[in-house]
Length: 283
Image (cartoon, rainbow, N blue to C red; front, side, top):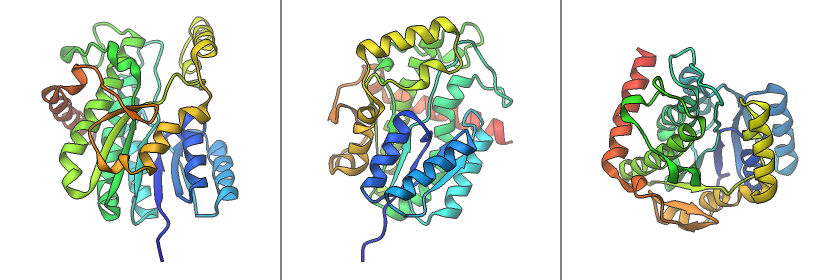
């Protein structure tokens, strides 16, 4: 008798994450997921149970906090014996520089360091399900990244779209090193661009002009969230998502990322800095 497959998705109460959860529930997965709003979490949980009763669980979490990311990982380890798939989907951008209670720039904290903390704490659950998969939602924005190693927290200058692009490049670096370190234990990791998706990401933490610009841009070039979930679901379920690792995908196909994204030295440097920042938070 085959066991039920389990997926853990961050940021699954709206947008791409919600439709990823729905589509995987339709494929028979038990879905564990995070969100910020308890009422939305419960509504999504009930929706998933109506699709396939599998004991889906939602966790409230503010993933700009490394402590909350760690607490969520602890809760997942209590609720699941294994994870077949972990999808790092939650992300965002702040119009103005915001510093979290842990002293981190918020876009960097949410898009990179929280996944770094959370995923590494879930590795034992992925090992228990091997072959297992990590899917990291990045963006084509990474092509315009210009990471300044002397100013990762943007203390000198904060440009929201540039910082978003930088963290999306970091997503690819992180996925690459994850695959290098854990492929031998049966865990493959890949990153992806979901497309320009009509989600609420451009309406959060921004001003009226920014919201209007996002609305216009996505109405002209955007796709619906259901379509935006396609590549995440592909990497979570299709053979290619376990046969290759350390790659970047778009439209369910492998795509060449930026030259910087292929730089293994910088990828390792980011890992080392991230470990240092994590230790600093938890010391």
